[in-house]
Length: 495
Ligand SMILES: *[C@@H]1O[C@H](CO)[C@@H](O)[C@H](O)[C@H]1NC(C)=O
Ligand SMILES: *[C@@H]1O[C@H](CO)[C@@H](O)[C@H](O)[C@H]1NC(C)=O
Ligand SMILES: *[C@@H]1O[C@H](CO)[C@@H](O)[C@H](O)[C@H]1NC(C)=O
Ligand SMILES: *[C@@H]1O[C@H](CO)[C@@H](O)[C@H](O)[C@H]1NC(C)=O
Ligand SMILES: *[C@@H]1O[C@H](CO)[C@@H](O)[C@H](O)[C@H]1NC(C)=O
Image 1 (tube, rainbow, N blue to C red):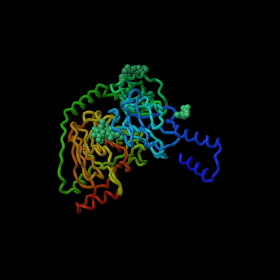
Image 2: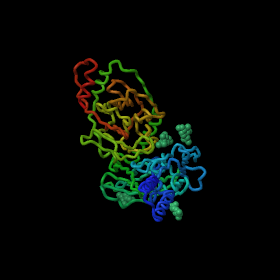
Image 3: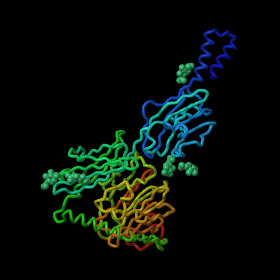
């Protein structure tokens, strides 16, 4: 508008009489300028459950929308909108389920928001019910509206694979996962090729509207050991589970009955397992204590075969970190991002240390350290990771603090955050103890009953700058205990 006033001003100043056509042109332009339209992107916008989406909508030609009325609403919900902006602010009238979840946003980093006529809607914490049409309605001394369709998908949980022997040569592997929307496709892979002998897949609808998947396939034991179950959405998002079927090869002496018996006894013991926590005060001579622990030091490396497919393992098999592309579902701890150690224990005392921070960086905020029964595979659900299922650990869950997986869980506040954690497994005594090595302090002990073989378990969480690193411990020296500092200094230099 300013332009045209300037143009008129220039015309007057030049003292040049505007011709009829020039005047007509100007008037027509000024009219057209008031004649704005609301625009949206063609096609549908995709969003994932628990995530955030922006529905782009803007005024064309560009104009300041700050003084206009903006109403985002669902079909037949004009009076209870998703968001209503008037008199320069967002009004309280709103559908309840969009409260605190909707805001005006910018359609791109280049946009200046309302000033540029950008009236895009941002929705946080998407739910399945958010799928469908949204109207973007703008009015001033003109009005216009457009519809935007939001397609919601939900990436389900990491599939859990359970092998069951059929006979001496074949294993029936089933793959289960829940929380999907829409229905995912299921593909079985082994050794980089697709398994054709896949059984029928059944999908079932949960109460929350998401789908659960159950598929199975028969695998010959003479095939490659690892079998993968790959679930994917048409958007290309996918989750994969893996199982080592060779571990389920029947042994000549122990038929399957024996395994089930063991599992049964284990579950029973786990249930009966009395869980005890001892919060001891700072140990009188921490360095001697840590030194003593290190007599049981083990050389631990990570077993790449056992890792969650998205995890990155260092070449020396000592460090693990989260995938860059990992999409966190809400603020849930990523329990499935696990890797096991190559070493397994079924007797005796064993000690190892895990570095959680490097110099100049704050210690990791998100991690899980413990042991698990051999034969267990990762699961995204905390409920599946109980001691009765053969998992024992401490989890540092960001702002939610520290907790154990015992029943009931024990939550701890550890300040300062441990920079290095020592783990002592006393298999026969049924104890798993955690130490803050830097502070030379005992943190807690989980008392339970271990059965079968257990293996160190690590999970680097997501979002930390440092990896989780297993420390190469110095050979315990036989020299008498010195003053308190040197030992810890040594241990840090050895990293
Ligand atoms: C602009 O105004 C003309 C009439 O002046 C009308 O026919 C046209 O639909 C309007 N365009 C928009 C996008 O509102
Ligand atoms: C929205 O946030 C306010 C304050 O932050 C809170 O009091 C209110 O309960 C929230 N409403 C909903 C529906 O979450
Ligand atoms: C999503 O919801 C959770 C609780 O359900 C809340 O803590 C979190 O702040 C919400 N996130 C956003 C971006 O609104
Ligand atoms: C084992 O079961 C599979 C699938 O049912 C079958 O093809 C195979 O012949 C069986 N093998 C033996 C030794 O029974
Ligand atoms: C394999 O196991 C599934 C259950 O997980 C079952 O429904 C299916 O019938 C089994 N297939 C065979 C051939 O045993």
